[in-house]
Each structure stands twice: as structure tokens, then as C-alpha cells.
Amino acid sequence: MTLKAVFFDFNGTIINDEAIHGELIQQILLAENLRPDLADYQRFCLGRNDRACLRDLLRQRGRVVSDDYLQQLMTQKAQGYCDRLATLDTLPLYPGVAAFIKKLHSIDLVLGLVTETDRAAVDLVLTRSQLAQYFSIIVTEDDCATSKPDPASYYLAVERAQQQYPHLQIEPQRCLAIEDSLVGIAAAKAAGIQVVGIAHTYPFHMLQRQANWTVDKFTELELERVERVVAQQDAAFSV
Image (cartoon, rainbow, N blue to C red; front, side):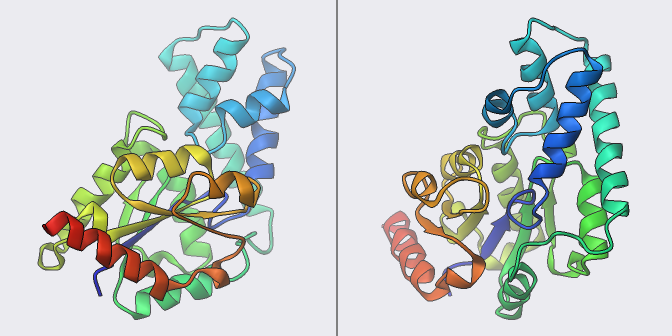
């Protein structure tokens, strides 16, 4: 198999938590005496890390805050997220995602997470969902100074995969990303990785214009078809 690694986004891809993030951002804005705006949230936050999201939301309203203050807001939101998940008896994982992850692992694909979420939140969800054992590569907000659509997080994921599995000869064209956001798709493609857009957050037709493949749910993803295209692309790189 030419396909060597699959990198998942996290929020909106594995866990259906966008409403939680939206509520927490709204609370922060209200505490800052600012009125939340859905359009601004979608523009500045979907698919991006909390630093970029909060910085740009505040800047949009004429607020320029220090790095220390921004870090306080990020810490507040991160704690709020973990507290909210602690109240849930069952994590809102997307249907079929656990089975899909286990299927990929069973055919010896390297699995990774490339997310704008902080590591503590990722570890909490993976531990509670019993999925931690399947992911050997994890890149979080804590690892990158920039946010998607910058491709730095995907470059780092490929680099870590190459270091951990040198015998697999992992290159970007032999990897696949699964993303729910437009900025996530842009980040993966900028790193030379083909992308499946999963229509959890954006409408199917919007993702279809940007991603290499688009599906409504994990059960629709045809790995054999992906593998054929990845093999063709890899052959083109080898020429």
C-alpha cells in the first residue's frame, strides 16, 4: 500500500464539540463587555487555534491585548472546555469515527492527530474514548506557534512520522488528511497532503470545492479509491 499515514483533525472531525467552543468564546466576549457575533466566530475561529481566534476577535473590535492577557483568556477557555466535558456522561464523538480509526489501525497505517486544540483537551478525550492507543503522532496547539491555514502543523506531523517510522519512507504525498474546515483543508494541501473533507461543520458543496474528496460521514470514505489516487501521485513524484 502506497498510503502510509492518515492525519485526523480533532474538533469537528472526531468530536462534535463546536457548540461547546462557541459557547465558551461567547462567555469570554461577554465578560469583556463585547457582543458575540456568529459571522465573526465563523470567520476567525472555525478550524483555528484559540490564540488566533481570540486575538482576531478582539482585534476586530478594536482591542489589542498583551500576550500575557491573551494567554489568560486561552487558559480560561481550555479549563472551561475540560470542565464541560467532565459533566458529560458520554463524549459527543461522531458516529462511526471509532470504528473507522480502528479499521485504519488494523491495516497498519500510521495514525496521527493534527489539531489546533491544546494537548490536555486532546489527551482527555482520547483517554475517555479509549482511542489514545491508536494515535502515535500528535501535533497540538502547544507544538506550533502558528495556526491553520499555515501548514506548519502538518509539516511537523510528517517530520515526526518520518523520525518514528524511518522504514516506511513517509512523504507528504503518501499521507492523507481528514479535515472538517476550510482552513484545515488549506493547511494540509499547502503541505502537499491530499485531503478528505468531512461535512460535519461546513456544507458538503463548500468542502467539495476545496478538498480532494468529500464525504458526509466516515462510512462513505472508500480507502481503495484513495489508495489508487495516492499511488498515482506518488508515482508522479518519483519520475
